[in-house]
Amino acid sequence: MTRSESFLIAPDHPACSGHFPGRPILPGVVLLAEAANRIAASLDLDPALAWQINRVKFLRPAFPGDSLQLHWERAAKGNIDFRIERAAEALAEGSLRLRGT
Image (cartoon, rainbow, N blue to C red; front, side, top):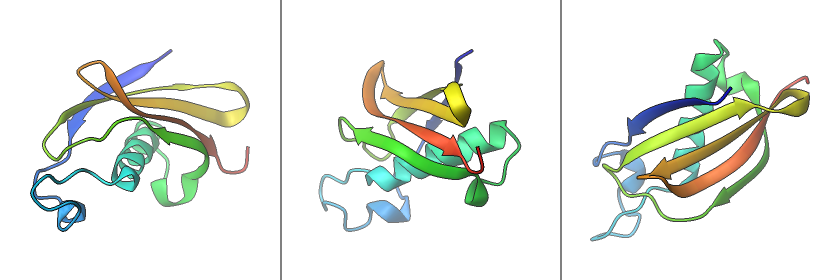
């Protein structure tokens, strides 16, 4: 079963300061952290201890203030596959693995 939720990163997020002044983009690590933290919260896990990153691919830039959607589902062998979109356009996708599985 795929789970989905909408979110946005505030335009004044500190990671955007100096990250391409005049046309800031969200660093990929911010998108990855947001996905991992939201998935961990849904599963009632401590996000600091929960994940090993299997793979991540950043497809298009995200901008501060974008309305984003996170889609994720449990896959085989303790993996969680996820995708982050803006208006149905894929921005990032990847797979996390629950530690210890």
